Length: 254
Image 1 (spheres, one colour):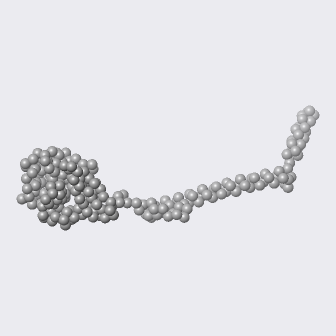
Image 2 (tube, one colour):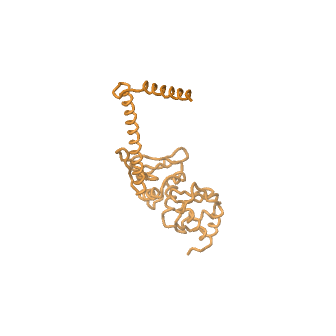
Image 3 (cartoon, helix red, strand yellow):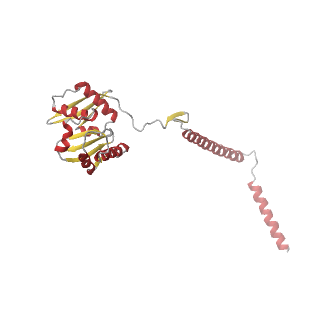
């Protein structure tokens, strides 16, 4: 019993000695350094938390602006455009055009109002990239230059004829509409950028606007439906075209 008391007293004494040895006065240099280091760490942690909260608040404001349909949002005091970027930027209007002869072929060059130009190896290649607005502007320029006067140059004559066939009121007496009878139809093509479809015949092509009815007899329209409509993309205008041709093939149009 006495031995246990002695052991307990010894343990408490050693504990007291350790506490005395580890005691550091509040005004000692060791304690001052420790408190200063702790204060710096706490300040750093506070600043970090403040930055995180500020960033989170800015993100929440930006998201709220997007939901409300704002065109801009502010981040760090700088306005940044986010939703005013158009899907497609309309190029400058067409100012002129010309056909450049390269050996036995002619290439098409479209010049825009800003002085830039694009060269196409043929009329079909042009239709693959220009819009309906571009095509309409081109028609007006061609009519201003030639009107109803048939050009003497064969390349310009073909170009004038293709444009005129598309936009002028179609007449059944025009010789172009006899060609589907005289020549085998090889394929059909749809150009979604300008909403034009084309009959590819043995020695020529006939270009037509998708929404317009042309003097094509029912049997020719049936032949058209039997040919797969080739194109890069099918859209609403393409489907409306197929419905129009189908009605014309069934003689359901007045």
